[in-house]
Image (cartoon, rainbow, N blue to C red):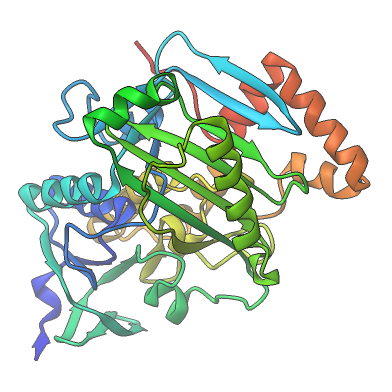
Length: 379
């Protein structure tokens, strides 16, 4: 089965926050986007579920009116080498959501705006031609003038067209998200008020304890996870959380599940071509050092939709899109902080991190605003 090029203006491969946002914006502009995703929604998505106030503004979502699980946070704790530092904001700087709820909400909103959303369809090949693109799937061939790759770090559009390098740095993570009974929510009490981050001693990653109304998400992520250290790091995190009372010994938790994403600092992907663009994790846009990827996925989805509309309606080439991404998230080279830390002996680097975390203003600006994208909500 083949679908004529005139049926759709843009094919979006991937229905996560980046893809659904692009489709939503395209449909609102009067264009005809098609969204394809291999999963069936609502689907379980391994992710801490941490969204910034800025990301919600980009989505035009009022957190007080969002109808599903959401917990505002006006504080966050960072712990390193036994020292704990709490940062507070006057208004919420981040929110906890449940990804299977959040992603379905965004995808259904794009469909309500006019996007053609189809899930349970796996993309098996992508071809870029002078006059358009062909997307091969297990349900037939789809064609359109443009394709947006939003299918995560293994996105088939990125694999086919994004010049993916074997030198890419992959971050691996494992996490567990458990729904709590009312009794457990009450018992955990003070631990349910703010997220906590635990920087790894070797500075290769961090663990987290992330409460969200009646859920708690715990996990660990690190670079270079191929060395087999991730299970050991996970076990150490769980042992520390058990000992502190955040995970009582008699409290059952869901099994840990793993996921991975790439960062652009080693081998940036090609973000656009004559008739394609990559957004979110498909573009390697997870924030360096923190791995926060939902905000960049949403913002890049908006930018890609704007670029697609300019191309389709005015013939403006897509090469301005990667320039906009680079202006926001850098060219894909190591960030300033990482470059400085890489030059230092490990002991000195740890000392530098201790100093930064110990200074409230540096922690607020360098760590939370710069690395995690957390800023106070605008009022």
